[in-house]
Image 1: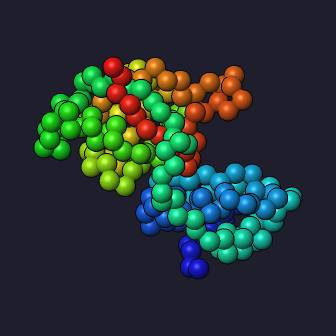
Image 2: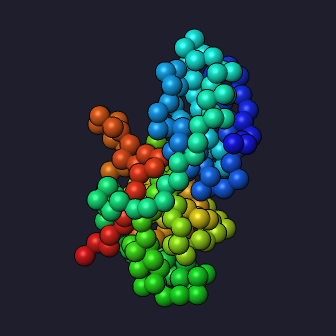
Length: 206
């Protein structure tokens, strides 16, 4: 298969991708059965970084493995494997999102809760996952003026992504609501609740 693959020093291999779907498929394939010496497979918005230990896996062998490994499509939804996150949909940008999408606030909530989201990649802050979906119909721009402080647990939209702020921080995402779910617990065996590839379903708090 033809892939744009570049080395990152002697400790990394970077795969350039044309779309978010390709990122998901490439990273899933590479993470399936990596050879000894692969430290991590890190997806991003349009690339996948493979971190290696060059004393175990030389970079030229890593490049060859990356080129030969087939993509694994991530289609299909196993609802039993989804993380369910309860949300109070009373966010201050809900009405703006509805106006932008030319629908009602109820429609926005129904679309957000009626979609199975997948964690495409993580970043920005520990525990922050960028979630995508094929047919949510919720693509909106970031706020023109970012807020200086967004509370932990805030659920928002930006571009094609939805996400949850794991801690208080500045941010320019459109706020839909709030959840009490803990996204990042450094004392836990798995500190991050959301990791690449994990399915997420949002549920409206009663």
